[in-house]
Image (tube, rainbow, N blue to C red; front, side, top):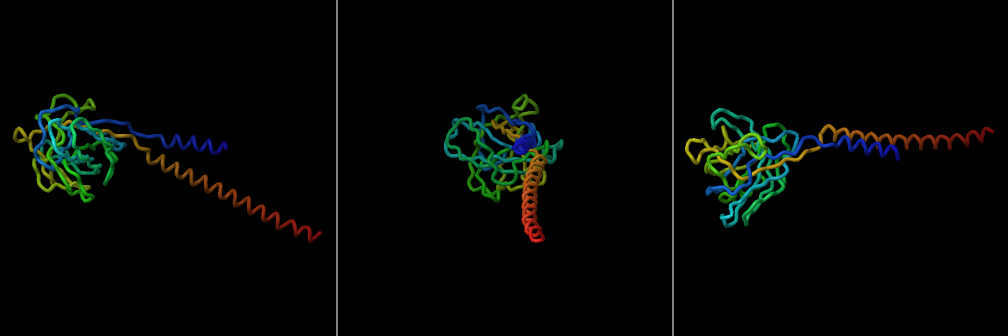
Length: 260
């Protein structure tokens, strides 16, 4: 009984979660404009997630005047290159969440709902975005729509919802044939992003944000597994030795009686 209690206490300590929840993006406000281009991609470039977490939820504000059926799928990106010029930046797709069909207006919050790739934030260079489409497992657009999330242009002043960084968002400027497979590149060497050359190609601010949740520390999970296996093995050896000792005693007693 005491050994079991000790094991459960150790399990509780070793599976303590690491990382802290954080939220990045821009406030969910009723903004001025909604995109008219279909199936485009939008990437938050004003801040990044803390590492050692996983993306957990995705929220946005949908245009009250929009009408019709619209589609949106959240995406986890890693910003692998940041440069001084708009064309220098590189964002790589690391995970894709569950696509949603939107038929009403207002503020929405959904679980990220990983479909393929990973939802883990492995460094301090991860951010999020979305595409106005539903995807298949190869990253192709099954069905797409015009914009779901409202935006302002140019970028709104002040920090994002995290209290740091900016409200800057990058986007694909009406690019055809966009696919969202794991490893897809947006920016330099991949699908084009806005070049900031004219007013409507300036960075924008979209009414969307995403949050992370802590994950168990991998090393602790491994230690718990090893400890559990060790406990099982110890119990098996103890029972085996006890059984072997009982059989030896039963075998020796008749021999001694025969010699007597």
